[in-house]
Amino acid sequence: MKNNGTSKRAGEERPRRLLLCLDGVPLPVMQAAKGRGLFDNFNKPSRLLSPFPTMTNIALSTMMRASAPLGYESLYFDRNTREMRGGVGKYIGRRTPDKVPSSYMDELDYQEPLPFEYLVYVAPEMVWRADMRRFRERFRQAPQTRDYFAFLKGTDGLLHIRGRERLDVALESLDKILREIQKSCGTETEIVVFSDHGMNLEENRRVHLQTHLRKRGYELAEKFDRRASRRVALPAFGLIGFSALYCADEEAASTLADSLVELEGVDFSLFREGKDVVVVRGERGKERIHRRQRDGGETFYRYEQIENDPLQLGGIASALSAEGLTDGEGFASGEAWLARTSDHVYPDALENLYQSLQGERVRHPADVLVSLKDGYYYGSSIFSRFVRLAATHGNAMLSSTSAFMMSTHRQLPEAIRASQAQPILRA
Ligand SMILES: [Zn+2]
Image (cartoon, rainbow, N blue to C red; front, side, top):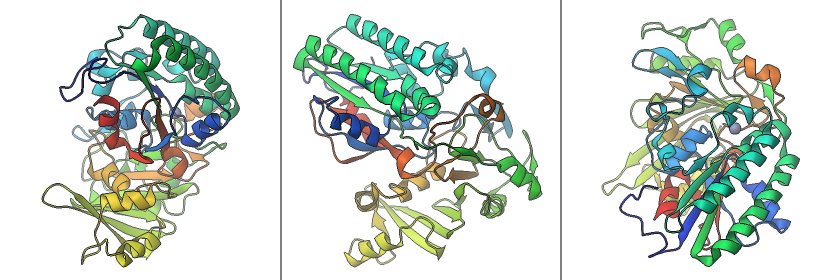
């Protein structure tokens, strides 16, 4: 385990920690489990806001303040060479140091063995049981004087493929294991259990993005230069609630976002406008998110409605202004927006959506990011042929955004942005 210098010494200045990340377990599922008497040694779970697109690598690299992964998924478009890279072949069996998608992986003391990576979506119960046994064994042998960080991926597969009931069974077995661990480690070990993203627990339909774009006169390409204004690269990988599109330039991005408005399943599209603006375009209208950074580093956002109110934030913007929390130009602090929108239909939308394109969530950000409505997915047609999708995640809505975090020793704040998680986990 790396000690980043700022953290206190585990087991001496503070209790040693077991950090246990459960892939894809939504806050309401954990709240319900606690309601049934499971995990009753833990304090109330907080809402951990997973960054958009709500995917494991993006969430964990943001949470651990680690290096940004190359793309949103292992198949991505390289903005420098302007061609598609990665994919299944690059994914299976290559979790070697030079291929690590983000440096958070260096911090993991336990993650599932490589052959499980795909098997988890085919035989999730088997993988979950074997994975949990192995984690318990490894943790038992670990020195008591260091923190231990484990990532269990089986929960994500269980939800995607089997749905909520099977996850509830899995959580019962996890509860037993954590009770055993608590009994043998005592209060000298703090356990922090959390997830990386939430999940929309309804059956999902495929969005016909490629067909739609071809009908609209676009050519789908794996490689193209900046002069090709009607060419689009559109990586299709996991079956998830967002899509990343790459095109010639900002002007092409705006036209592309317009052409997606009527497609069934699309909630809204995002694209950059210059250095400080992200535009939101959906069937309900259009708006701009403006950001400004003051001296001292505090960040302010303004919601500019151009046509209607696609993110349903008009009322909150007016309330902030009525309470005197906006400046003369309508900017309110990121913290004020967070306090009023952490359980909104689009949680913490201004900072979250702005950062998804203007921040550094991945090294090769898309030109257009599409957030699908709950109940819809986009992804590889090969995967969708052998998988019936009981649930998925990836969009910017409440269910996918609502991960959780809870501790045996501390009551954590009601809402935690992913970018605020690192000091809670490590300091
Ligand atoms: Zn997943």
